[in-house]
Amino acid sequence: MLTALAIDNAKPRDRPYELTDGSGLHLLVMPSGSKLWRFRYRFAGNQLMLSFGAFPEVSLAKARAKRDATPTSASRYATAYWSFANIRRTRTLDRKDRTGGCNVR
Image 1 (cartoon, rainbow, N blue to C red):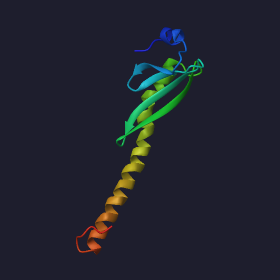
Image 2 (tube, rainbow, N blue to C red):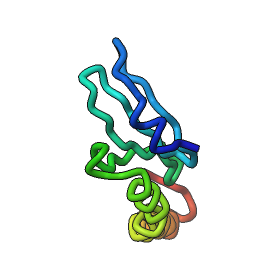
Image 3 (cartoon, rainbow, N blue to C red):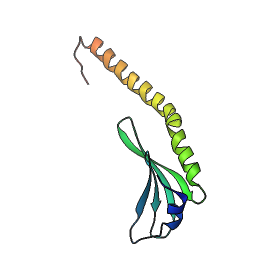
């Protein structure tokens, strides 16, 4: 679990590095000194990343709240994805009916 003290004490290094909070949320510390919130998650078999903003504009509590709210906001994408998959499945079934059971592309 990441703390506000650890975030304040994070100093820039030669290369970017991450401070992990858990459940995919981490703080990316850049060589320039900027600290950026990132959230990695999986959706429909793909790994995705969201950026929540820079620290201190987005506090640790706000970043955690955004992380917790992400699955509900992703559900609308899930609905769109599954409806698209359903359309593809229906089209494949229609092709099979027209071709006598053979799946012709």
